[in-house]
Length: 257
Ligand SMILES: NC(=O)c1ccc[n+]([C@@H]2O[C@H](COP(=O)([O-])OP(=O)(O)OC[C@H]3O[C@@H](n4cnc5c(N)ncnc54)[C@H](OP(=O)(O)O)[C@@H]3O)[C@@H](O)[C@H]2O)c1
Image (cartoon, rainbow, N blue to C red; front, side):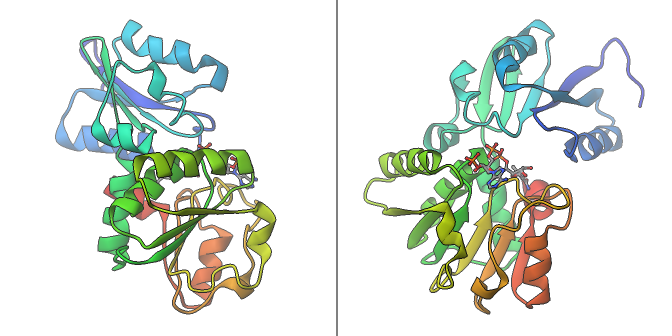
């Protein structure tokens, strides 16, 4: 890569950030297209998020992606947000237009494109269970409701965060009922009875040895299993594959985003 005085800087803010594939394929894309840009992974701790966002202006960084765990907290630090961020409440991209920072969210759209095009799955009228209530969960849940799913169950380790997400969704999509189940209930045998789509939006599975959140016996043959984790083949995806279920991992979403 040829870095010069004119090279424009982009990157990703997150913690962890080491797992991110974005630097690899974004830099490859810049090289292939001959664009004078570079894409850098920035490890940003929660307590440094504001300073890092101010740094976008100070260092004339052209744009950044936002990943774990900043997608929600970053929104209030921006000058302007697009309609998706207004509805979903989370941003995964910041564009610096002459010092004005504008937030976008491409996760939800990427997820829908991926599950429709790569998975052959149409969300309309489907029953969905989402594991997790972090930034990615906001984007995917909101988009799935927009696509016309019939019901949504949220299961998160920290129940208070699941309640915040439910309140957010019910405020933005009035009359759409969102059910929360306790984290322990993910072990119930009938957890996925009648559910068409299971989406893991937690970071569980990113590291070898991470807990597998649900047990094999709850999976049924009509279920579609989607795991947003993309840096390795997760135990959830291995289990779905072994049982012959339709499934997709987060690589499909990453490339569709
Ligand atoms: N494929 C793609 O294109 C794509 C796009 C975006 C994100 N992702 C992936 O999505 C994942 C989540 O990212 P995010 O930005 O949404 O992160 P986040 O906002 O930090 O949320 C993390 C979620 O994971 C849960 N969690 C973490 N550790 C857990 C554990 N040990 N047991 C149970 N739950 C646990 C958290 O639960 P608590 O609320 O209890 O802490 C929370 O619900 C990451 O793996 C990221 O790489 C993929």
